[in-house]
Length: 376
Ligand SMILES: Cc1cc2nc3c(=O)[nH]c(=O)nc-3n(C[C@H](O)[C@H](O)[C@H](O)COP(=O)(O)O)c2cc1C
Ligand code: SF4
Image (tube, rainbow, N blue to C red):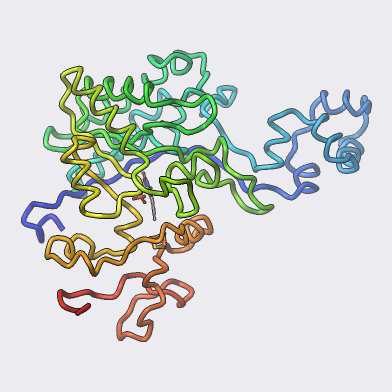
């Protein structure tokens, strides 16, 4: 792609780390197989030295409220939502050791990316990923990597520094993080401004911004499904759909990102700022640049809805752009681990010779070709 564009287009890849998450278990299965029995269960059930089988039978016989009063908050949540690790689970060795292990893991991934020919990496410090959880206001680790903002940004900076020193000077290294976590007691734009100054001071090449997308307020999944961080209010903040308030799904990240950019410039830091979220039209994107809301504008769903958006706009065929419906049809596919396609084109011309289809053979994987004049 870089060659085909004469060096104009650069390719960056995101580096992601995430902790374990399991599917929501069936109640009986959880109580009989997964729940480790403790003295607390025995005490609460008044079953003293009873055999494990007896205790498990008694748990299964409890009503919902009785069971909730017998299990710990974490056990109840594991049963209702599925077991999920958090960065604060420092009683687990591998979680306690994350600050020692993650910098090298990110650095070796970055080296592989550079060797493979990418122009840079975006360290994923956003949404529900591990590094976002370190930055989060909900991070209460007591080992110097949680609590205050200074402590919460420490590991993200150490990861960046290790990646930077393992890669060449021409290789771009930046991060994606949240302008607002959109969860109760989460980071707000003031926190994001603070992190932006830290990242820019450290020398990051760009700062890219998303919003929300957290597990904290995700909807309860069905039995057999895993929680998905784009189903609650913060998920809506990340990928707003057309069922919305007066602002609609459009440009909800413009204002916070604009504040972050202004805070950087005030501090004399010129690091390029990337903004995404509900951008669909050329004029809207152009206005963000003209108004100095951001230095680079990105979009996801509109590019999926019409992969020829860029050519159409550049060549003066903006009227032929297929506009995204913000229905989040693809989110349903992603959540079910199906190949992501777009409702606007994935059933079109399915009999076209050589068309590439999804595994179930029912959807096309790539949008039909477009050439100037096709729509006239
Ligand atoms: C199909 C799809 C896949 C996505 N994958 C990622 C991802 O891997 N990393 C990421 O940071 N954001 C991802 N996102 C979120 C987008 O980067 C973006 O923040 C969000 O969709 C809001 O922008 P939009 O309104 O332009 O879609 C994805 C979004 C879509 C639609
Ligand atoms: S399926 Fe297509 S039109 Fe619908 S929200 Fe996703 S990208 Fe937009």
